[in-house]
Image 1: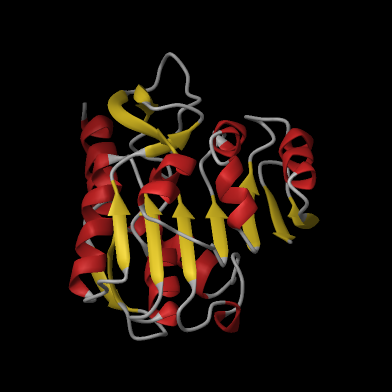
Image 2: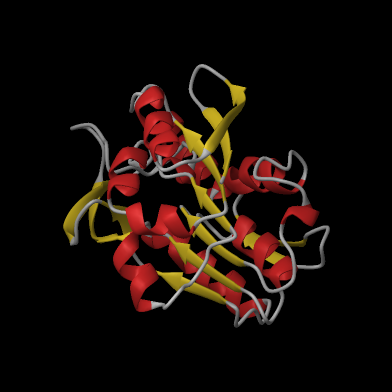
Amino acid sequence: MLSGLIDRLRQWKQRRPHGMTLPDGNRITYRDVDLCIIDEIYKGKAYGNPEDIKEGDVVIDCGGHIGAFTLWAAKRAGPSGRVLTFEPAPDNLRLLRANVKNNALPQAKVFDCALADRNERAYLYLAPAHGNPAANTLQGGAQQKTVQIQVRRLDDIVLEEKLARIDLLKIDVEGAELKLLAGAQRTLALTLRLVMELHPEKIDPYAALAVLETANFKVDVVSKKPHSWLVAARK
């Protein structure tokens, strides 16, 4: 009983919100379990260098989490740019929306949905209470808690938003990459540069690479780990 209470207190501490100022001046509200994602973006530059995004750029963030990459991109794209961010998990979404609002970034627009190959209601499998909240997935197991969410095709949203080009498409959707790409053929045709994290334990990464090559991207595997590949592609 005591060990269970200690475990719950540890989980609560890990997920209690904190605030800090990021290197670019953005202010972010986060939980201890989110620090690895913030470090990945701001210190590890997993999705590129600051100069890769320029004033006026159009950026799409698929898998927005609490908004670290969205803040990073919106700061660089500036008021004349646009950042579309997608996040279906309720706890992450609340922090994402607050972080965008608190930094006064009207160029960033948040969408409360996951992305796949059709428009429907679906179940999102939530990461364990002690795990990384960025690991919520559409490809879960029977023992995981679920929440019902909206799933949409990226192509439909790009059409609704009247986007004529996409300077950077960032994808980190925990195993739903192939479904997202299947619903984003028009989007890929408008995209100049793409960065995607692939999860080999959930999908065949070579199948995703083949989709990009068929869409006329030049693909480079930036890093390859047992549980994730980072892929960069340019037209």
